Structure formats: C-alpha cells, structure tokens
Length: 130
Image 1 (cartoon, rainbow, N blue to C red):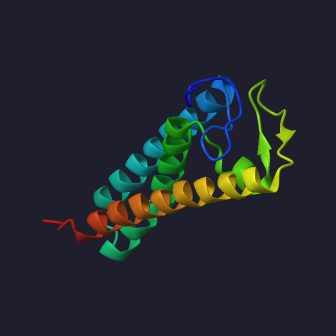
Image 2: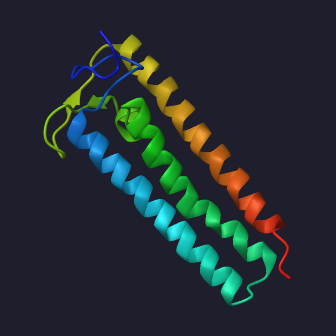
C-alpha cells in the first residue's frame, strides 16, 4: 500500500483526490498573493521590514503544497479526522495510536511550512532596493 492509495494510513495519508486538489489550489493562491504583495512592496518602495509580511501568503502556499504532496491535511491530523470522499465530509479516527501518528505528521508539515515562510521572508527582507 502506498500514500497514493485512496485509504486512510495513520501518519501517512488522510486525504483523497478531491481534498488534495483543494490543497493544491490554496498553494497556488498563496503564491499569487505573495507575488502581488512583493510587486507592490518593491514598486511602492515600502520599507524592507514590511516585506517580512510576505511570510503569511508564503505560509499559505507552503502549507497547501506540502499537504497536497504528502496527501495529508494538517487540520484533519490535529483533529483526528480523514476524508477520501467529497470535500466537506470527514470520518473520525478512533484509535489513540493512529491519532498520535497523525498529530506528529501534522506538526511536521506545519513546521516545514513555517520554515519555508521564514526563509522566503528573510530573503525578501534582504533584497536591496537600488
């Protein structure tokens, strides 16, 4: 069984194709917002410290793409849920061991997203304006 199978796997896979598509769309939305934000920041000559706020849309993008890549929803993982049907329907995870595995995976994805957002924000801050 692999992570691409349409079955719940504790700490590995808790969303199916419909949920994965939704996470990928949120990733693209985050990238678009980040690009718009940075274009405005540079075009309008905002102070360098304001560019740190690009971390917010980058975190959205990173979270969306990481969830899609891992086939794992952070919110579902923290709340003990999974979904392989239509968006908006969830089933509960009842086994405590499975819930712990899901929570660890959710923390990993959230941590990676924060790290990515921080690196991009610091990079945007450090870009010199000529």
